[in-house]
Length: 353
Image (cartoon, rainbow, N blue to C red):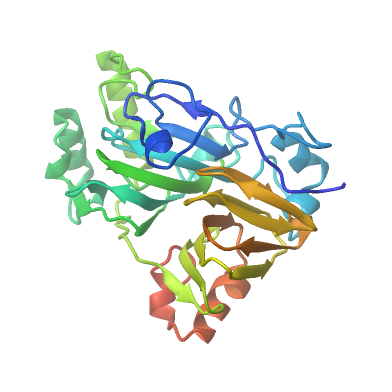
């Protein structure tokens, strides 16, 4: 297949917790009026799958490309029924529901191929912003159930301060929420499975029946992992060159996320053999891949198929880069060469201890 950098259609979610930070603060254009809770930058979720917007593959779905040439698109011998990465900009102008996502085993019990581990990179946060992350040590299942029924989340959950530039890796089964006043870039497994504890629907705020609400809480408790208490981390820097700042924000078996900042007049050259999702977190930027230069506008995303083999990011640029890592080759070894010990590397996510 004649691969090239892929611009994709972007599903937009106008859930009740959203605001206007994505267009107003990030500068994203082309969005509808009203609340913008989430833009799904790369998605192969059933019912919300992306399609290629332009070029010879225009109109072709991401699902079809993944099935047609998984090696060329995803790389590293990967096989699976869906493109494995889902990325989003999320505006929590109001708090998200307190919820969790099932792990792979629980998801397969629901007829889905995988669950959802995710990570949040904080782009902006108002003073005093917080997140609810995990249940306090020693809280029993019955105590958690009582608190959820009372909607008294602070009685049992950890409330953490949120600051721009930090990242939180959230394993499946972790009870969580963030907002208000929080703008996030999220990377996760391709799944929309979740169980939440709220008495209303997050889509439109309409009330659930008592029976629906209690059933949701029972399902949540079945999928809850009591030992999941992740913390925010600043990421680990890798040396590159003058004028280039490369930070590994998080990593685990399902994804890695980095932030690359390139000063005006400098460039970052990066070889790869797995798909890279590049989302712009700053002013308009340019990147060159397989002889093609792509202009990336504010808060826009491009998917770089594995077969392209490498990218040059021209400064000035500030981009977020997600990919499927080989944890030894992409994470442990370069960070060890940079002087980080195993305990520092293990703070980035799962499977690194």
